[in-house]
Image (cartoon, rainbow, N blue to C red; front, side):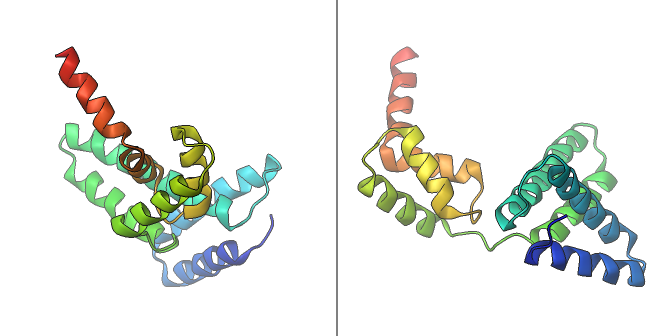
Length: 159
């Protein structure tokens, strides 16, 4: 496995949690390192961006689990998943504010030759570099391009 700074930090924290016998955090870190190892075995280059993808994926899985647990009123499992999200988020880059994200996407859209949704979102995802999740980027691109208002007006016409 390629050791970059994020992987080294995860391994260091794994050792710390082992010594502290903090099983919940230990299991979260083991799961993350396992996902990274799986990608490495598939010959996916493990860099900080790939580690951020793994971390975001792990957060997304837990959020989906929380939604499922809410349906069956399992507060104990909701709390467990929430604590695990908190552990994972300490490794993610600090998220951009909505204003920062809007300004960055606006600048990208203004400078872009391809003003289509696909062209702008592709450039925005690269530029944001893990500091906002895909849903926020997508919503912001739609807002900047005025797609959201077009879609809303089509819904009004259809109703």
